[in-house]
Length: 435
Image (cartoon, rainbow, N blue to C red; front, side):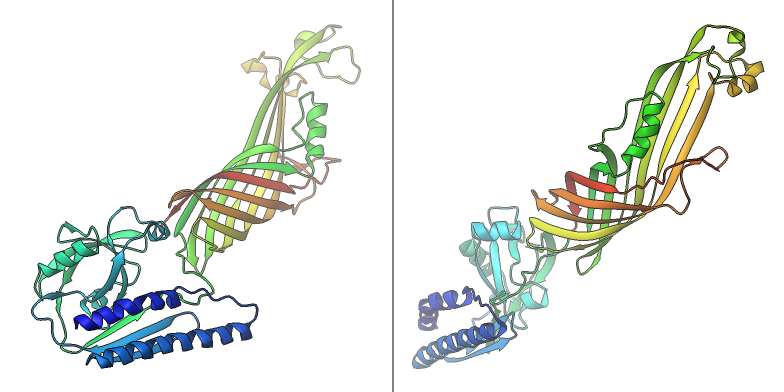
């Protein structure tokens, strides 16, 4: 048996080279040709190992199976029983720094499982390649040598707790050691020798604060009336909207979510009303028959918001870079509210004061159905935190003409058909759960 192990160790280097080889091609036909050549090399290697083992009196069968993405190398060897010693049935190696980064493993010790034996205790307990053994019965698996010593201290059929790392999570299970079989069949599976896409788990839940920079196409319509009322106009280069976005994975990289964002600004200016102006027939009682001008305070409030559901498709290029295409569907509105007052009210004369030009208010609103095609890019920083940038174009449709005065739902004469169309951009922190 020792001679056989020496043979296998000497032969290990070409096997590692074969299994770690990367195959590239420019066409399906070329891929098929290179795959066939790769299979012939592995089969030839197996025949050489079998010939050397036969010279040492060992019976080894070497077989290759699998599909275009995975090659399964099966070695059947007949050996004598190893006696009454605990048996897990795993293939293992020390962790490398690259593997720690790839698995996002949080510790600097552990033993990497590279495969499990067919019908072995490890296979029956659900252990698999790329799992990492952390502790056995409270004893840390520092490296391969420590792992072997730990196993040798137990007997078959003993049950102990083991801690291991699998698919990004620490897990604990009660593991029952087995008994080494008289006839042992060992099966190892190479991980993605030829693969079109590395398997990556999609985040289950994502959440983000979204400070949108929104550039409305028809901001001139709003600025026209704001300017005539004496207020500073909105920035034509865009304004900041505050909002939130969340979405949940529903399968195969598709996400269903919800989002909402809003903007609000208040402004105040002083305004002088001329009592001698013939176009101003209504005056406060205290200024009737007077040639004096009087001051009032004007206030303006502009509000805009949109919200809806989102449908997205994520493409997992890597764990740290994830582009997404999607669309948001919902509704939105814009509201303009103007008030004017001279700061003097009389409970017994509110009706006359509200009729006067010095104490009045007006609120206008326009509502929309919206569709917002969008694309975003997530760049990971930690396993749960990253930066997400999104670009989109908002398309708004209103089923009613013009703006409406909301107190009576009246259409305003000469009102423009203001759209809610515009570009929206956001960059912010993105939190993910459930990798």
